[in-house]
Image (cartoon, rainbow, N blue to C red):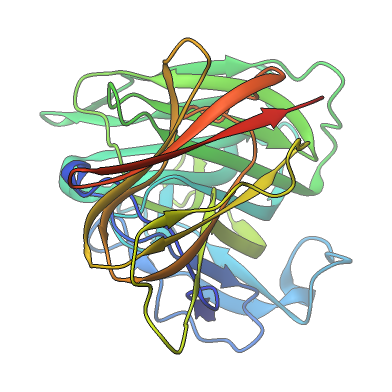
Amino acid sequence: MKRKITLLTLILFGLTLGFSFGQSYTEDFEDGVVSDWQQYRAGEEMIQAIDMASAPAVLAEGGSKVGYIQDTNGSYTGAAILLMGDTLDANYTVEADVYVYENPSPSGYTGIVAYGDSSKSYYVKLVADFDSSNRFRLYNNRLNTSTFVYTFHHALSTTGIDKSEGWHHMKVKVSTNAVDNTVSYQCWYDNVDLGTYVDDAAGHTTSGLAGVYAFQQDTDGIAGYFDNFVVEPNGSVAIDKPKNLPVVMTLEQNFPNPFNPSTTISFDINEEGQAALHVYNVKGELVTTLVNGHINSGSYQVSWDGTNVNGQALPSGSYLVVLSKGNEQLSRSMLMIK
């Protein structure tokens, strides 16, 4: 297991929303260590690193090991959920190679989890449900007394999708809207964009852990196989460690400018404290927040990919980036050309 905080990289999220510093997690199972994985529910079987030869098929881009989960004792009626990270993690992209089944009997499926938090009895997952229903599902299970109910559910089309059994790549970009606390999930399967869907259900999570999921409607579940599991922050703030701390707060012109598809914004914070970096459109509307939290003095770089807070691509045009701290405020105009 390889868990890392990207070198000189962190994300500063809105602390008022309880967000943590964004972290990167990677897992290829090659070292056989799975101690950083967590059970969603007490008594679940832990994920295992097994020989690739034990999987139904060899993953060409995999190594000698692969991750395996299964509810073999039927403690959770065939569902197995293993997670990694912290419940305060937010605004990240999770992806993995997943072994997908074609028309298993009884119905069963595998997938990946985003924003799971057992303390809230809430987790959202993308699964390949290739039985007679022939669909992807993006949904949560919300525990209502002793029964699981769906408060967020979308059946996604499989038109033009390779539904053959075997290894496929699944990916979800999850973003929390700092304005209204809704959460958007942008989904991909084998690099095909399946769309973006917004969760505004009562009691939904606004942060959480990412992980893997397997389920079958029987007493021992279905075997889930996973590899090349990666969680990365949606943006990054690189911290340069200067010999001398900045003496004033500064905001540099973004580079490149004009830009397409991304640009870098550099700024200096001379005294630690609460600071924010927002992007506005020409109408003065907030489109995204790049930094919002307690920041130490130092030099920073922020990468912006031209998307709004929901991860949706913005049109060409002028945008204003505003750095604020206390009574100080600095701004720069940016031009995005597509």
